[in-house]
Image (spheres, helix red, strand yellow):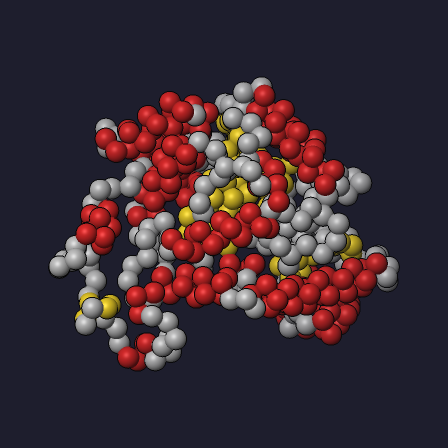
Length: 432
C-alpha cells in the first residue's frame, strides 16, 4: 500500500501530465518526501525563536558547534555555512545561482519554464536518482555503442533495465541519428530512457547544429507515435567545446519539445569547474507545469532522503563562493584554453598521418577524451603492454577501442604519448 503522500504526488502528476506519470517506475511512484524530522525541523527553523530542539545537531553560543582542529582550515567561512545539514534539495542560494548559470549558458532556455536545479552528490548520484524514479525492470536504456561503463551498473544492475545500443557514428563519421531513431522505435512497450551525453565519454564528440536538428526531429517522431521518452542529458563535460559543435546543452532544445518527452539535465561542478572531489552536481527537470515540477522535486527529495539524506554543506558553500566571485569566469576560461590547446595538439598529431597504419581517432571536438580505433592489435592487450613496458595508463573499452584522457597529459608530453602508443602497436604486431 502506497503512503498517502506518495499517492497525493502521483495524483497531481497523473492529472496534469499523464505521460510523465506513465514514465515513473514502481519505486518512483512509491517515493515521497516524508513529513518527518527534516520537514518538521525546516518548519521550526523559521518559527522556533526561543528553543529549537528538533535536529540531530549540536550548537554552542548561538552557532553550530565545531572543533578548532577542523575550523582552522576553514576560518574564512561562517560556521553556519559549513557545519549544519544542508537542505535535502541543496543550498537554496546555490540552486538559484546555478539556475541563472543555466540560463546564461543555454540561450535556447530563454522564455521557457524549467525546474530549479536540485543539488546531488555529483553526477552519478543524479543518474541514480533518475534510475530510482523512472527505471523499471525490463525498461530499455538507449545508449550509443560506446558509452561510460557506470551506466550499466546504475541502470541495469540496480534496476534491471535492458541496454539497447546503436552505432554512435555513421560510416561518414556523423552522429547516427537514424540508428538512434531505430532504437527508439524498437521500444515496443511505449517507454524509452534515452541517455544523451555531450561532450561524449569516451569519444569527446559533441554534435553539430544540423545533427542536433536531426536528433530533435527523431525524438519528436518517436513521441508522436506514442512513445514516452525520459531524455537523460548527461552534461558532465559541459562547456568544453573546441570546434564547430553546438555550444549549449541539448537539454535546452528538448524543453517543451513534446508532452511525451521529459528532459532531465544532470550536470555539476565536477568537470565544469575542475572540482572533481567536491562532488557537487545538479539535477534539473525540463518540464513547464509547476505543479508537476513540485511533485517530481518532492519525489527526488524522497530518493535523496532515503539514500544519502543530503549532500555535503561544505562543498556547496565553496562552489557557491566560487560562482559568485568576479574572477570565476576568467579563471575557468583560462583552464578551458589549456584544455583546448591540448585537444588541438592531439588533432595535429593524428592528422599528420604517420600513425594511420596503426590507429585512427573517432570524431572528437570537445571534452576530455579522444578514442582511438586500433587497427591490428587487441586494445586490452595494448593497454597492458603500454602499462607494463612504458608506464603509460590508458583505458580499453572494446576489442578495438582505446580511450586517451588528454585532459591529464601536459601539452608538451602529448607527442611522446602517441609515439609510445604507436611503438607499442608495432611491437605487438611483430609478435603475431
